[in-house]
Image (cartoon, rainbow, N blue to C red):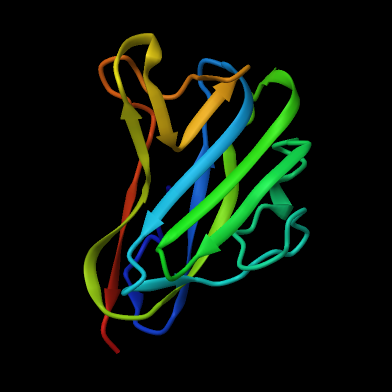
Length: 167
């Protein structure tokens, strides 16, 4: 997640970019993002120009369809009261996504001043060994989550922080 380069002012809108990088060219057929934010400080603004899914409040993915050719658009919804974004897309064939770049843009409006307010991928591993189940953010191929590492399920995930200044 890439925040704005400068603090934002209370009442202003700002973007956080969802940046994708796959340096090992792993096969991926499913992207499931569960992003959390504090709704006391910010709210998602509906941006769905050229999106496949445009019902409700969405994050922007329309301009990135050519670079990230998902052909299953399952979920694109922001739940401002919960402080949660759920984005889920897939591909009919396993493919190595060599592309690197912005996959989606989250447009927020700042509500209240605060320092270092997190915007973060939620990911929770339940259980151990082969029976472990990952909830939240996953990148998978044929149903197997490939994000993270055995010793660190958050490996490969970069969360961010936003500072909102008072007017």
